[in-house]
Image (cartoon, rainbow, N blue to C red; front, side):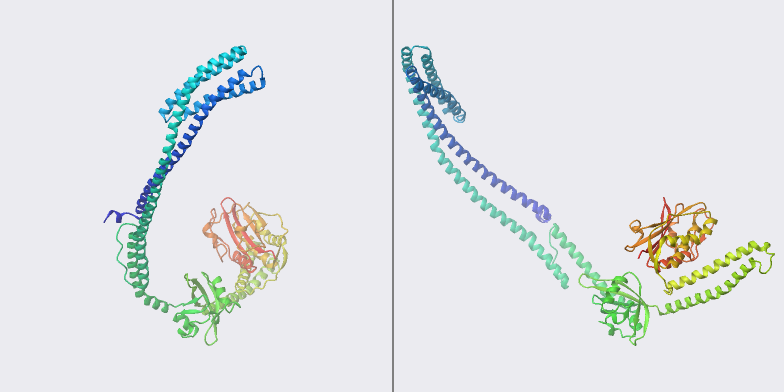
Length: 626
């Protein structure tokens, strides 16, 4: 395996990028250097021109200074105004000349020969300025004719210096002009070099683009096309191309794809071999199964369901679901949507219709088996006709036993009451305690039978509720009054601050539910405890509610009561025994909480229990406000 084939795509891309960056850096560096040199030559040309210009002005300034100082002396007595103007012009020229020389010296640092010549020029200028200054001083301090004679002598001394200065400046400017003449040729050379670099850069960029295209074509595109073709071949069941050579990501991906394809083909063979076994298992299941599409049409039924409905298995394909099942008045296309909303993951009861027109009850549950393209539901259908018959028999038996027991128990209760009143004799003191116990137990049995009958009616939806607008405070007061004796005997303090809320309920049944809940609470509350009753709004107890407002919640709070977590879920079931810490034996709750739950659920509400280690246990009852 070569080095290039063993490199990853990232390493190959990095090497290509580094190579491109190096080439581009060389190109731009060379181009920048040439541009900088051309700019330097242009600046140098402008500087040379400025040097020539300032050197020529230097000679003019010397002539101007000599002329003005002479006029100053001549007109000092006869024309003061002209004399003063001449003096000002002289002073200005005298002060500018040293500045011009300093500028020239600063800009001649890269021309040593010219700098030496400028030093000589500076010396002659300095001597000349000293002679001119002596002429000005003589004009200010000596008599006019004596000053004129002195100035003439100084001019004679100045003449050779000026001649030498003129020669030096002529030589200086000649050399500068020679330098200026060489600059255009240098600039042309730089431009040609820049043009050559630009052409080379264009060729280089073309080569870089070609290299990138070759990299993409050979390293990426060609190999990616092989991967794409392998996907198509796998889909069509054809043999794959041989594995891509190399150790980069594409080669590894292709190797993994070959392994996946081999695994998929093995699994496909296994799936096909087990498909008949799965179909056989579904066909032999005792429960009815069917698959329904998104339009509510049946696509598959197993033989069990077809037999239950009295159809041939093939005859039910493309059948409308709504032609076979109904649910509480929901029919037609809406039945399928209703089932999706209500039977997914849950069991609902429907009425199934056989081919001969007869009906029977079924339990119906669905599971979503939809794919990205198609919507499907898997439905399980159980015939519950026998269960319904058994339930009817159970209800009839409970009703019969309850009535058969309640009549003799009522007679026993009346007899005990008459016995306590002394109807059968006055000497009953010896059995008074036993009589009281028998009376209380008889009343408890009668109450238990009544609760059982009410519970059966509620579960069978045969207990009619007479709803009206009622005051919550009145309902709670009646329930508290009903348990007053038990509260007093248990040494429990019952607290209720009142409420202004109204609810639309069957007041008699809600008082019954409250009484049953309070009775259960009294059984579980230790003596000396303070139990509080509170009425709160849904906003306060939002975590307790599963419905939207308007609702309110009646809470019964027992601070020291800690119900074990494992018993909370079963608290509202029938005949539960609750084992609490500190109790010698369990407490039987009978039917009270189960009946309380059934009454409140019949009103569209809920009951529950929440336990907080710091706040104790809270029994709650949710009721509709309207």
